[in-house]
Image (cartoon, rainbow over all chains, first blue to last red; front, top):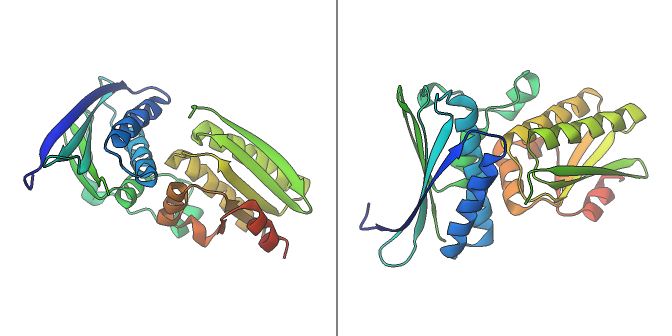
Length: 145
Length: 116
């Protein structure tokens, strides 16, 4: 972890229910504010959290219908990075086979959706996806500055 | 932030301005689309969506905005956005929306260009 330690950790279990992504985004905001992240970067984290939750809600098909989120403040002695893990126990998917959404194609296609991962990757500093038969884990990080 | 959204409209010399409030999710996106289609039926071919009252959107709501862009292209109309937060503007650029629907800093700048 490059000498970084977890300075603070919050775990949240969310039911897959309407607007629960908003609850997750409020938790992310509170922790990012504690870290003194800039308002624009907090907004980016908030949006990425919403997209990660919606992806899990809509695509995981998990039998327990819940998502576990861990928010870790990491750093050597002071907060340097917010690491957010979003885990479901659904059917998983192969990230390699996902088609990259493209606006020209989407304007012609009947299906306009499928933007979540592209948005998350564009807003966060790093994103890892681990997916298999036992579910999907998305780990995304944003540096404090 | 609430999980609901309100949509209002003002008709300004040939340009219809749609104002949003709150979180733009699927329900709010559908409401924006419903209002946009009503305006198109009234004959408006230039729409401006003012997102000044919105600090958060999700990709489902934005996907519905893409449907409106598609509709405006079909009727040879114009759709633009104004007053976006930096994160929403960045998201629209990530998705490529700005290629098809210009983004203006505020309503005054948008109307000056759209009426020109």
